[in-house]
Length: 295
Image (cartoon, rainbow, N blue to C red; front, side, top):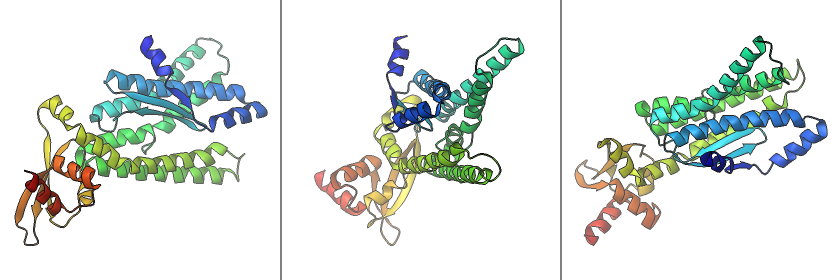
């Protein structure tokens, strides 16, 4: 019970959420909004509970006017099955609620706002399973691909899918305006999806750097880690080398000259040292010379 209270305390409202409450109160949709965000919060809590069960740390649950986001530390760097199950937990919970309410209705149990509750949970389950970041389906897509094409390419693929989904949703909302009433959700939610997908792409380097500094934890899990070899010209800058790092791999860097002769071998620890001491604005050869001189 203490863990659940601690989890509830991590829920926070986005700065624009107050405007939504005022708008809904003014238009008479306050009850509908309360029901919607009750199940949105339920959805995000299931992500968090699953993540905690896998030993991951929950940073916060933030509620936006158009949905919620559970911020889970290093979920992207977790093993694929952990990310897939954690991402799946939210939609599965909404689908389970819809199934339970359907069974209760079949047995004659009268449920207030039954149709609206069913619409909310079915919509949350199906929408979040769309295969594009930042949606849960996008996280499952990335996790299933990252061991085949690498975290970086898998993230960019899922980001592109998310942007395509956002554009298609916007076009659907725009076209539907000419045939039915205007659906603001189909106009505004795509913007949230599109820009959130862009943020996922921008966080790639941050995620990889976190993985590099916590490498010992991954090696401890299995005792083995795949090595990834990079051959780098001596005038290449450290920050450019970092763009080729990926998750769950130990990087070995061969310093070569223009005649393709190996001059030296550097570890990823030395690359990180060059990043910290020179902010990456140093060539790999200069970094090696500095290290050799120190030794």
